[in-house]
Structure formats: C-alpha cells, structure tokens
Length: 90
Image 1: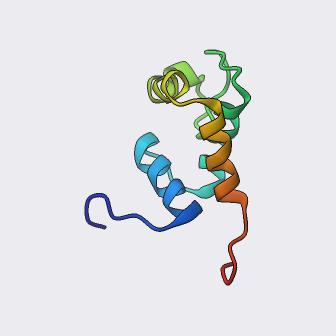
Image 2: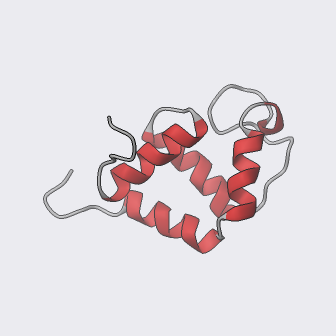
Image 3: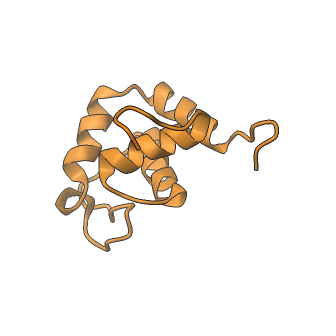
C-alpha cells in the first residue's frame, strides 16, 4: 500500500493503529482503543497485544504517546467509527 493510502471509515482507522503499534487484527486494535478510551492506564496492566508482557515492557511507549496527546473523545469517536456498521458493508 503506498504511503498515506488507507481504506475509508473504520477500516482505515484500524490500518492506522496497526501501523502505529506494529500489531495486526481488528480485535487487537479494539483492545488498545478501549483501554485508551477508559483513560485508566497502569504500567502493570497486561499489554492488549496478547504478548503476556506488562504494557510498559511491550507497547508502553507508543501507548503513552497516544494517551497523552489524543483526547479521549477522539479515541471514542474512532471506536465508534470502527464498530458502526456502514451501509452496504459487512
């Protein structure tokens, strides 16, 4: 996929976070976004990527960067865009 070329709507948001965190899969992205939307980060939490490591030793740096820079209402909006069914799409 060329630089900056992403799908539309929720699929594009998923692609963005997959690239940002170096992860794959809609469910993993949703786990990260739900944790961000909750606004209750603790370094000793298990990483949402499924590595069984604590988040601080896995994706903690990327997570904290987003946690500190992106407002929770934006994260919730992105979650809504991923979960919202689109007309004519499955």
